[in-house]
Length: 206
Image (cartoon, rainbow, N blue to C red; front, side, top):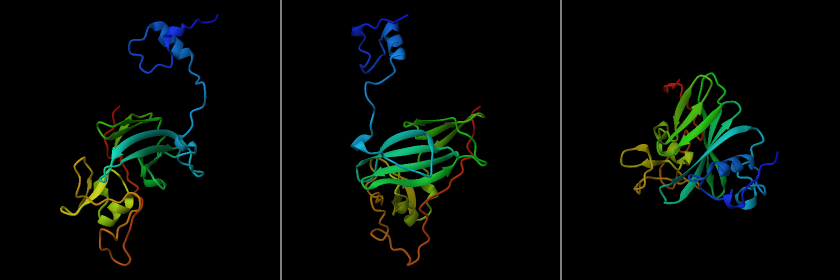
């Protein structure tokens, strides 16, 4: 039996809040696109031969310089979250987060931009992970070298703080991570480009 699709259904139209049952059924059955969806710029945003990612969540945020950046949260098959910012020179891995110890298989991830939280669902329940953990960067060099658009060094308080819309006095250099431009550091500073952070202390929701 062949389903008849009304041309007036406008399957490709944005917004189906007032759609009829026949339109919704047509959309459900006509899930193929007319052409492939390619990456912006015609090339892949990220190529990682050593990793296999199963889930992705993306958040746009404004840095201290007023520019908007895309931050990717990629779930690897091994159960790690890779937090990556897309810069002009290419993607930069901000941190690798081990959510569970021992690692567990994460079935899905969901990003709440309003709460600033990444939810991770497993067979045992749901765990939440904040999109930014600025206090984990204990020094100015760590804060700047992380190149996290959510975080910046506040020279007044001497802490790595979350960047807000009116954060005009925090230090941040996402494109280059230039520490010496802002901070006087020792000749052999103890730097940390990646933080491995466990969130097993978060309360699970069963």
